[in-house]
Length: 58
Image 1 (tube, helix red, strand yellow):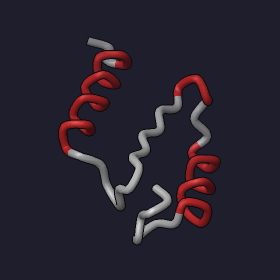
Image 2 (cartoon, one colour):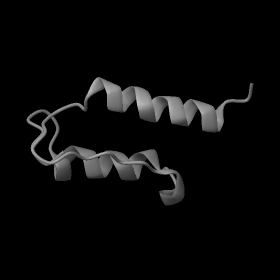
Image 3 (cartoon, helix red, strand yellow):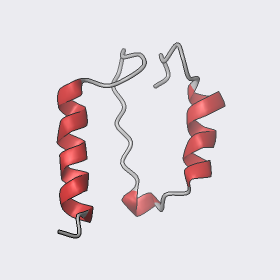
Image 4 (cartoon, one colour):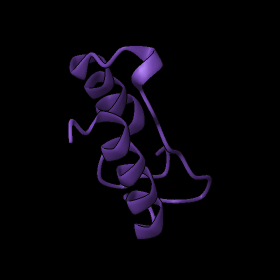
């Protein structure tokens, strides 16, 4: 996140994280070293699938 050329870590991410207000025990932050904006698609799928399984009501 610190290398993100679009959204600055201290200027955008940290204020956004506080604004959203997710409880720390439910917050999952994924950070890669030497990686800019975005994360690999396979990582997105993995964590979204886990979130859906955890919070699905079906």
